[in-house]
Image (cartoon, rainbow, N blue to C red):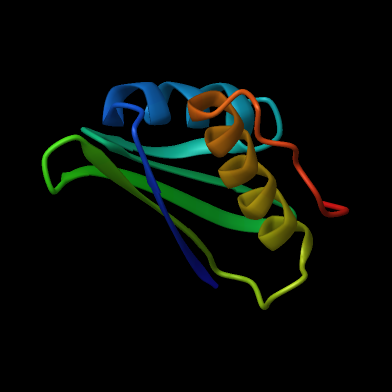
Length: 96
């Protein structure tokens, strides 16, 4: 699955959040500028962040698993956390 999110946070901030969030759950397998890949028994998750259109950052999270898998739920939860970091008033909804 592949998910997209546009945020006001900087790319380096998003990648730092990915390191903390996924690093506590999965083993890092790739580190590149503005891209991280993590893997574990639940599958693989890749996170990339790139500047887009001035003050926006495009965040792309990909898993190698089908929708509603554990890796997929982690990907969606991470994007919810990114959204909440950019907009503290955002209330997360969903059971992931």
